[in-house]
Image 1 (cartoon, rainbow, N blue to C red):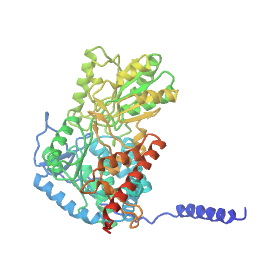
Image 2 (cartoon, rainbow, N blue to C red):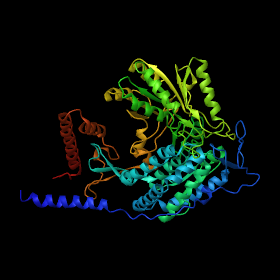
Image 3 (cartoon, rainbow, N blue to C red):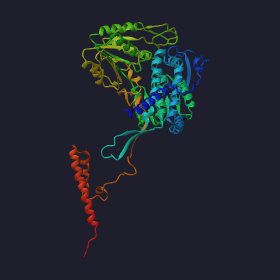
Length: 598
């Protein structure tokens, strides 16, 4: 016992020191980012009128990306639509900077993350307000979808990022016992990203964080519907990179339309795209010209399944939040609701009660539960989906109410709407809506709801609720999608150790988690001698050139020795193999021995 006491004391002292070190806060400098031009009203001339009235129909692509607040139609300014040559210049600058950054230490990269995290925590209101102004979402939705997700990603990278980018040793197999096998991860170069408008802050930071932490540069094309916010968020990134002494031009934000995006795809070493399936196919086609890796996070039509044995009040609240995710723009939200027939009437009535209490209006001008629709004329498309359902037998069970919109509203608001008596012949159950519509369909059995949930061209995520967790897990395991939440919704994305992505028309590849981080890397398989220089690779004599007569027989015995079904089979083959080698050596010795002619 006396022998163990010193070891226990040392172990306790070590553990105590680790705890005390955790209590010492790291030294993280503050940084300043100029936000005066985004907080104050800018003087506007006659050409740039205060209220922006967009054209009906598809907007013409010009040399300018005009930005405005969806909720108020106030003009925010414009940014250049970059030409292909300008895009290639941005990528060339990033590539030059990346060669320097690839040699940076993980300590320097972690400090970059800490500085970003500190700024985000100290400026949550600013970040959320800018997101709200550019996309129409409420401050609460901006905090949930922009701030929390980004902070979670940063803290995961701080805690585990280096571990997953270090060499990973693997089993060497039976034939290579004298070797050591490992996987090494190297930066790819310049990571390109074309991101959507729904989460302007997180969609910029998400690919940038993974790219920069893994030693890459990043060139990100922001959506033409969220260029104003994206270009401000770029200032935050620049300031943090400057604070850690990173090379200039490591990260770029570019603006423009389709031509700009195509030029980016053809210039970078990997492309990440967040958007529609149609554009995703175009991205793949363009990427095939240079054979670069592609990650596609495309549309979704997530199923929200409610069994009859749930805690109904809680599930109803989660269902409404899931449907109205991101200010009714339904990005990463649930779009198909399947409720067991035994609780269907009660579930619908409770959802309708909440929906009718929701007020819609400019999110920064009052206390509203839901803001504006970001894209021009999208409310008309949403109404067409509702009308199609009504024509085929659905009914509106309830709708939210509008606040004081004023005379300047230009069809950019849509009330949350509950549809009942829906089925899969209706477009609302098949097409991605991207809007605050809750189509609720009843089911009778687990087998039926599994079939209904899988009856979709999309396969991004699902949520399954049941009082019996094993039942919920069993249902979710049979749904063809990339993300599943059990008795919750979208919780998997808050676990940033997990990969995120879908199947079918929802795309392929993953970002977030270990898989997403390593997807920004050149993955290199390496084999080296375990006991160098004492044990080296030698080609066995029977299969050296010129190959001996029994070369194939030797090879057969070698295979049986290594991979025989039983231990006895392998031992028997080993004995025969050694016997063959011994006989071959004896023969060679006799041939070399001189003949005595006496």
